[in-house]
Image (cartoon, rainbow, N blue to C red; front, top):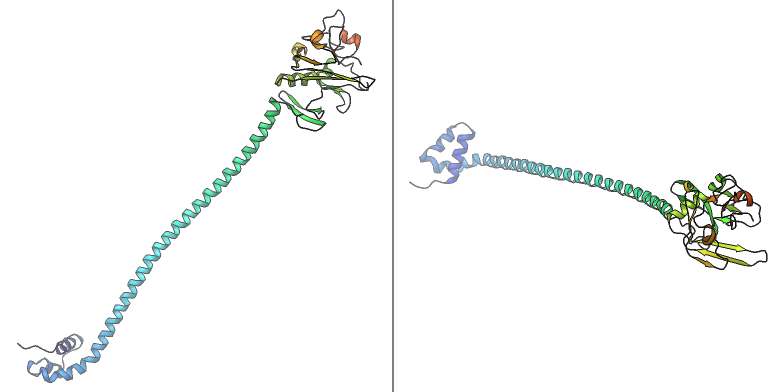
Length: 294
């Protein structure tokens, strides 16, 4: 068996597939005429073969394009999924950022409120507004009583009573001495209830500053001044240790004595010393305290 030219085989196959048999084609199938058909048959099928190749190439390209489209779509789907995940995480981050800002704002408000509360509690528990302030009238807050004003002398002392020229009448009743009276810029008495609350909150010193008509001055200082409650008639519970040159009368005559006014006699004398001498007194009749008559 001898080898056959491949081109003849291809041509024969194409003719069988693409078209019906013709006289010339049938002759090409004859084994004895293969050599004579070789050239003429190939010339006939050559354009068809080229067209077939073009069709196959087009089909391959179309398939490749379709595969590329599917690959692009697959990648687009993956990218869209990633974009959706990124968007979701971005929204979550924004939500957390908003929550954090909201929490920060709430913390700031709570911190401010806490600071204000601490300041108020500090004033209530430890009323000492006259430290490091200039000479002026300041507001004081204490538990159990509405805020009230009191003058500071500029050197750390709160002024609780001032008598200078007799313009204010100190011959007052119990309620007036309890609540206080007078002009804070001039002559006044701060009030027994305020003194009780102030001196009960912490240890306080009492400074008595006396001035004479000749211009000379004297003072007496006590290191533990405390006034009792109204229930006990505002007794002088403590004065502590005295120092100074004005003379110590509180320790000798007034310690533990109750307060008396013209309408409430609490002294130990046989008569109402407050009514007799004029003013409000912590007294044993013979030694009136400084709130008495001028």
